[in-house]
Image 1 (cartoon, one colour):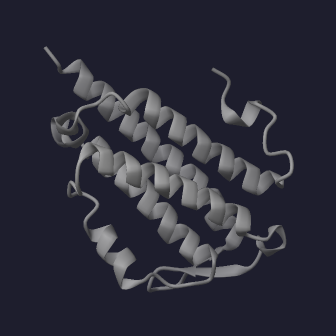
Image 2: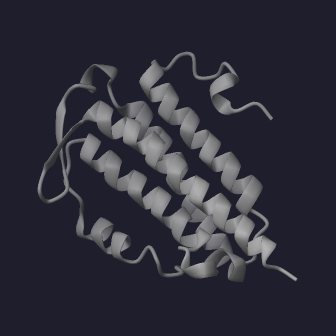
Length: 165
């Protein structure tokens, strides 16, 4: 199947946001393809001590929420910090996990579209320490961080499936 960035879609969106949106589309497709068939138990398995697929999916969308909050010039809420601290914990059923993932990707895509292209060079502080970044830097990190963790989810899913009798 042709990857989103090669489909000629989103031509109305500038290249930076288009790249992020395509990365999020690819993340959604890869998770469905490689992780969609896993059972609840398999999603939370930790073979060889690896973080579970469930953790990776929670981490992807909760990180996107945090990164986009910084890109929007805001600080994290108590709810976001609480969600960060609970990423390793199973938070509901298999259906709940995939719903959180899908809803999180969809919301992130809307938020990415809402960012003004002229704002990419605007300075942004990240975390309590206000580490230096920019709107554009945060957007690019949304894409690369998401793809990194999708890769980890896919690898863990393959390990879990490979361990089946």
